[in-house]
Length: 301
Image (cartoon, rainbow, N blue to C red):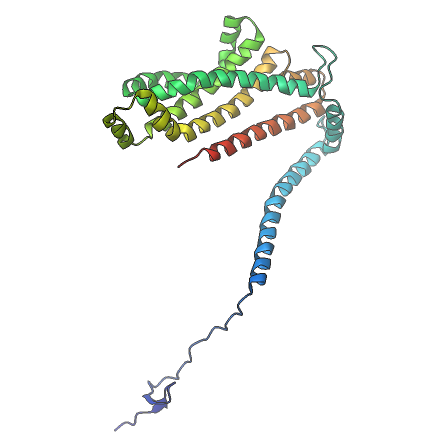
């Protein structure tokens, strides 16, 4: 007859052993509870670390860009160094709005001239594209009819429309505006139509039951629901227009940042061309950021 080993349990009673050594459960050390002041200090430290990481990443990216630029400039050729370009930028922005004649204007006037053309082209595109998008999205027959036309014309390069503008208007300034209008039209039409098509059918059925007028349906149902899509189309159109205007002005001449870049190339002033590249990028970034803030403000989804 085998004897059963008896061990004491935690309560002091007897318990049979299983034959294996009893393993005591691991007890995690209790962490001291932080006071409210310590919690606030820890939260501030975490916030400072997050802010530092957010600010440090862009600085590192720009630093790597400048380092690569410096290395490429030292390999030879006519690419100016970052220091030389910085000196050229300081000279340009010392008087950005000087005027010495039609062919001698500061970089500020050229940027404003390009922005004026972009604003006019975008305004015309909004006046035509947004109402057209509502009609295309609202009525299925119009949607099917406009589909092949948009599919055919949308892939055409915007600069291909520039000769048509020159032929129709006979001047470079309206031709450039026409080119901006065409390239800005499609994102507004398509995004507006998509936004209208995304409106739940139940909303429209309720409006039909209540015998609401088409104007009430447009202003109270379709427009609020489609507004985020409309703003997305505007944002895409602005980016496209700012890209196209530089190339269009290189071809048409006159006053504008694109023509200014081409004129500096004819003068073999590469430092000024690089400055113009950064100016074009900065203006495009500001426009994009402003429209993204506006889109988030009116996003009700």
